[in-house]
Image 1 (cartoon, rainbow, N blue to C red):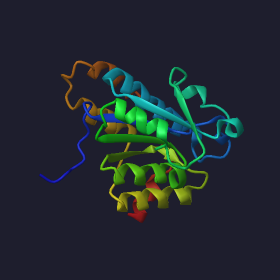
Image 2: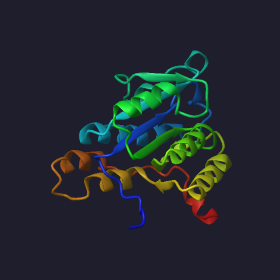
Image 3: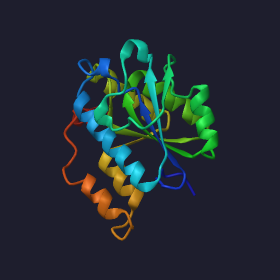
Length: 197
């Protein structure tokens, strides 16, 4: 059967890319992007999906912002534009090489793009949470999403990810996930993207 990109809690990992203090003033829709990524992280904890966190040159760009809710996670420091550094590769191996990656963070045309290419080349299915991903420029963001879709990544939203992972209102964790969906995701400027599709 053709691969349709159905998410599963059994074989997924959440990638949280470089949501750091120094980016706060310059990233388009930063507050809403982090808020959506935080909901994905909360859902991953409820559903037992392991998260992986990176920071780009933290000495210069500062720590991960506290509102992501990731202070208990080990942040992998990096200088490369991909999250797929040796330490992350080891972590993936220890997790049994998950087949699906749910990707949130910044910047869409840099670290998100390079990470997506590396994951796809390894045969890992990539689900980019479009309303939890951004760049400094909305142009770079929208063209990056379009380009990554061409490469075979799935574009999705925060709420779509959460609902696909539980799949049924009878799921034992549905009530907890439903609380994360109490308020709809804020508009992060993605409607313009559809004119580019």
